[in-house]
Image 1: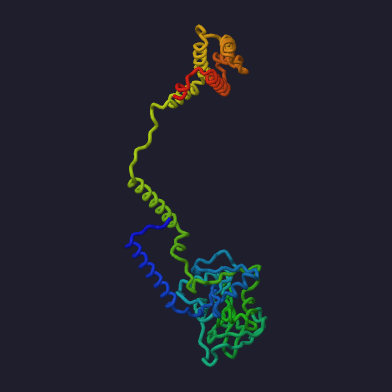
Image 2: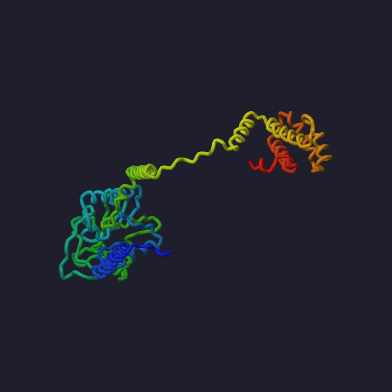
Length: 390
């Protein structure tokens, strides 16, 4: 069926569609090209991202998950968890640093990279290297350790650890530049890299880098890993902030209340029509009322008696029998005068005659007998058709 529109409406629709099309084309053409991210995020497949390392842990059986909440929300009952802080970027304050310290005090481990990662660590301090040493450089193991089992590594960095504590163990260095260190803090352990290169998509392929990454992560059967994305900007939305508070139930209740108000307003503002009431003169109303009365009084035989007396009266009037004949007289007269020899006719009338005085008559049997009397009334044409329809 074609849509019928006035000429002015059709013109307005065409103009609006043309404007929308122009805006879509302009947005597609003028959209700025996205620059390659340099944040080692587990979501990024760019060369500076870390999606490959994250998927490597997943497929290797590690219990790893992205952590998009502040450090203060880290589980407090997992003493062998590892928190990966790969070049954290945004909003690093004293509260976050204290939360990392509490995580370490509970026995957790932290793998942090870069100067920004050092800022979140207790006793953390980094310095800039000689500019001539910046870029991709190869570093040899400083000591044999669990972290140096993969041999030399290759980092893209201009940062080194600012030494000042003899308890900080240097694992990789060149000259005075320490680029991989570890130390104990309370019940936990800190591992720091000068750069996130070993876990980036471009750097994990270099010789020794993957081994360093897996050595730092540890045993997959014991370690639970939280890969931080909070400091990469992956913050929970407004609904996520309130979803764990009682405020969400208040919002749900307000929504239900709003729907109730809209529903009642629409009901009040709609057209008012009178309800259709059934006629008080309906014959079925009398029948239902009388049937309910018999049922509540448990007078099943009385209901049968009414039907039987009505049939007795109509049949005796048709046959010209005096008074109220018995069941046997009615059956005999119907057979002789009307040639009505229906099977069980005499037995049914006899049962009706005896059941009328039976207070223990069951409803099912009474219904069967009343239906049989109605059938006999119709077969014998005791009621004219016009009167039967009314």
